[in-house]
Length: 251
Ligand SMILES: [Zn+2]
Image 1 (cartoon, helix red, strand yellow):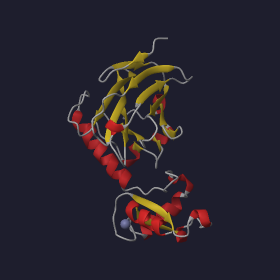
Image 2 (cartoon, helix red, strand yellow):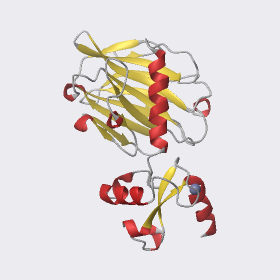
Image 3 (spheres, helix red, strand yellow):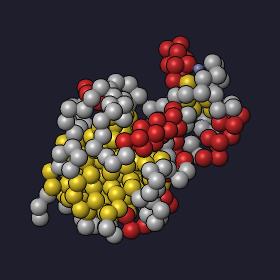
């Protein structure tokens, strides 16, 4: 079995139906990998085509994001179950704090159904950007290929065929991520029932109850969860990260 070690811009055929794309990075950095499902025109069909930590499943489960500890995450893609109008799965990542040029050990590994490696891509010399496209799975000649990209979206340099789509899609994706409230420390909204999230979101008008900010929102337990506060709509409120940090400093 020959494993393709890819450089930026290189591609390799994926002769498997179920693949796992792992993004790994060195300790001390916090990276949020995500996946974007694009149609032949390079656009997402809807918000549901953006898979990230707060919405870790897409295309009815054909794409699943899971974290592997503090320094890696895997995007599992069942290529055979992807809708026919999904032409490309972009594997990207963003950072809330810091930029990718300071992240050590960035690496993308593509494995097949039985765990064998199909391709690896050490992502070297990334520019000073907060969002990066690591690679993409794309349809070609009735099959699928993986292309190593490794470019920041505001670098202006892409090896991909249509650079504009990356910028447009990632900008939209990050905007959505910032507007989707998270549970601090848990970084996963599944611990709060969707109905409760919706109720709190609508009651608070999708904005911080302290300063009305609409970005970087978090679900805050009024009575802290660690002190027995319930995960109910009555004990949850929307706070922006800044106001939540201030509150944390007061307690
Ligand atoms: Zn606020």
